[in-house]
Image (tube, rainbow, N blue to C red; front, side, top):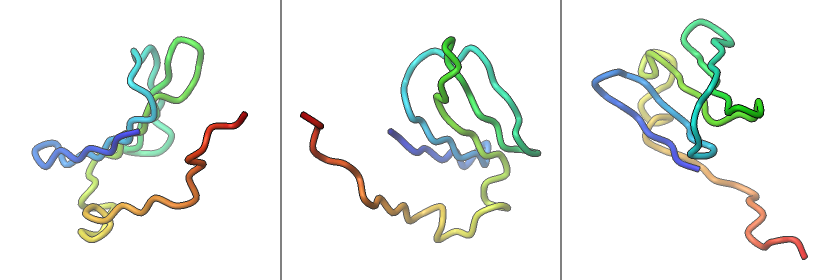
Length: 72
């Protein structure tokens, strides 16, 4: 998983998997969800991110409760 911000585009993109995007759907104005050929979510793009998120929200990412061990 990767989170990337483009200052030039003022867009925030959350990558869940790096595979080819075959379909995109705008779920609300300026929020686009990308899907792979099987319909799984690949990532989410947020346009006008600086207007939607506070600067500290763009700069600070919190990761919590991740299952770090693989299931047997």
